[in-house]
Image (cartoon, rainbow, N blue to C red):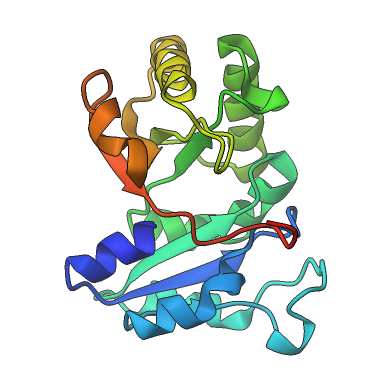
Length: 199
C-alpha cells in the first residue's frame, strides 16, 4: 500500500522484500502489481520464491546508490526480522531513512501498551536503530470492524505516550476509512493485496 501511494504521487520506487520471518505475507507475492505501477521488486531468487530462506538479495544496495528512488524495505515484524536492518544500518542512516513500526493490537505480541513497548524496544535493540514512527494497523484481515480500529487507535496513542514515538497514521481497510476518519487521524486507506492460500 505504501508503494502504491508512492506510485500515485509519481515517485520512482522500489520494494525490497527482506522478510525472512513470515512465509505467508511477503511483498514478492505482489511483484506484478508493483511492476505494473512502474516500481521494482527486489527479492531473493524467484526460483525459490516460496522458500523460507534467510538470504539477502544483493540488489538492495541499488536503493542506497540511487538518490531519486524511494525505497521501501519490508522486514519481518519481530526482533529476528529486525536484525536485517542491522545489516544495512550504516547505509540507512546515511540516506536519512525512516524506521516505521507497525503495531497491531490484535496480535499477542502487541495487544497491550506494555507488550507493544517491549516489542518496540526489542526491535530497536536487534536493529541498532531507533524507530521514528508508529503505524497503527490493528485488524483482523477481512473481518476487521470499526471497533478494531478504535481500540487499535487507543493502544497506539498509549504506546506513543510511553515511548515518545509519534503515530504516523492509522492504516484502515478502504471500505471503513471514511467511517474511521471521525475518530482517528490521519487515516491511510488500505487495499488487501495479499491473502492466505485458503482465502
